[in-house]
Length: 224
Image 1 (tube, rainbow, N blue to C red):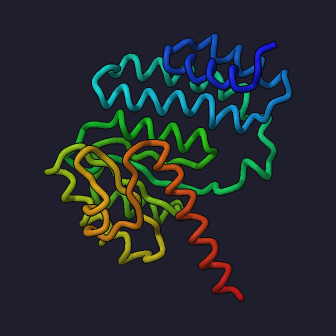
Image 2 (image 1 turned 180 degrees about the vertical axis):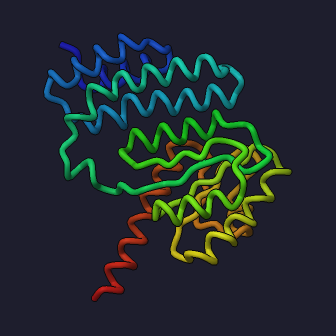
């Protein structure tokens, strides 16, 4: 009999090797064996997509491979997600506005981050690439999202992040701003006035969950 750890590893591999049917079948086998569906998502499918992100960054995978890996991810997700208990599904969940800064047309990294938020059960408002700065502000106000995730892949477009942060914080100082992208560092994020920085897709979601938890604690203290 295949162990839980073996099934998790096989789901991971199915995503990396863009085996859509295999990912779906393994997810069903994992579920039929009575294992925790949330763990299957996070430690199987999502771990696979995390590796895909690394392969893309290292120029070992390109856009076609990433898209096929995404199909495998969502095939497995379609099996497991409906079985995640509601209480577990709600934990740490929030809304995020995500997009690549104006002037920047690189969006695969951003799309991988978007998938990870999707996997974690967040409501994602994806603005796409080359997004006008004021659009981030408008979308946050319209959706009342707790987190805005900004991506830039070039130093020239990265400068726009600082402007967006200032614009958003003026309208709503409690919004949590998360930065990512090749030229961005922890120091840059701090200097720009962001609330967090993520160097990969998985860390982006973890950081965002911590941000939402912090916001809810502040809100809870305010009501006491």
